[in-house]
Image 1 (cartoon, rainbow, N blue to C red):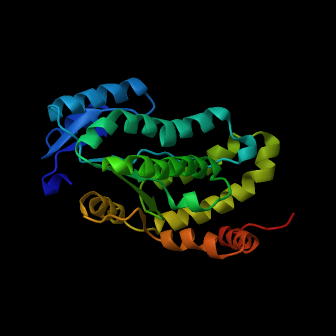
Image 2 (image 1 turned 120 degrees about the vertical axis):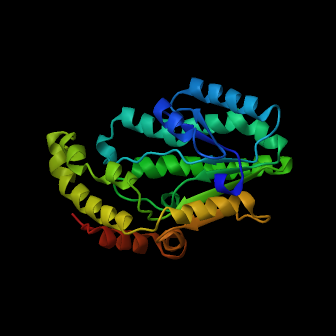
Amino acid sequence: MSDAGWLVFATVRKASDRDRLRSEKNVYPVIMDVQDGSTISVAAAEVASQLNGGGLDGLVNVAGIGMVRPLEYAPLQDVREIFEINFFGQLVTIQALCGMLRKNRGRILNITSVGVNLAIPFGGLLNSSKCAFGMLSDTLRLELRSFGVRVIAIEPGSISTPAVDKTLGNLEEVINNLPPDGQQRYGPMIRTVGRRGYDMEKGGSSPDVVAVAVHDALTSSHPKIRYRVGKHAKLLATLPKILPESAFDAMRFKMLGLNESA
């Protein structure tokens, strides 16, 4: 968007990243951490100061982390952390900037996941946090429409980024952190599902498809309510709606290399 002449307020967590971005044309870096509400307030004030009382044309919420956990043994601190980043922090960001968006009848783009449409073994923390954010996005779309603010969801499918190495590259550490009975019970399943998921993500689409969707959602005179982009996104969003649940369960077990029966 900066190449198109937009002034982009790019949020970063580290001063070193802020300093690096200062040389970029039409980019104004702002320190912000969605896990720290005080930094969101300070960032919103800084943006307002730079706009001199004007409004914002768009907000792109893209913060997110993933975790592989069997729900039976998921530590509550992990549950709280993933919801803090994937849900609460982004809600606070929207609240802090909503007034500026309303001034310009701007747009809010919420990047969720194709996982909002289906459950995946050991992906419950990620998908449930993204589902919550997806419902929040849909509700905001209805609440803000009369003020001219459009709220748009982007649901990426398999996208090949370095993030997959953080989420699926440390499966042995995930298994080792389980109690002995959990390691025995879930270890082989986590390895199987993790390998399949890693291969799917690494073979996914370029992040450029998400960037194209973001550009269209911000600039089109008739943006879509929802963009499903990237490998398998449309298929995985459609199958749960057309297949009986039992058939879709069987398909997921087969796709992930798991045994249906004990």
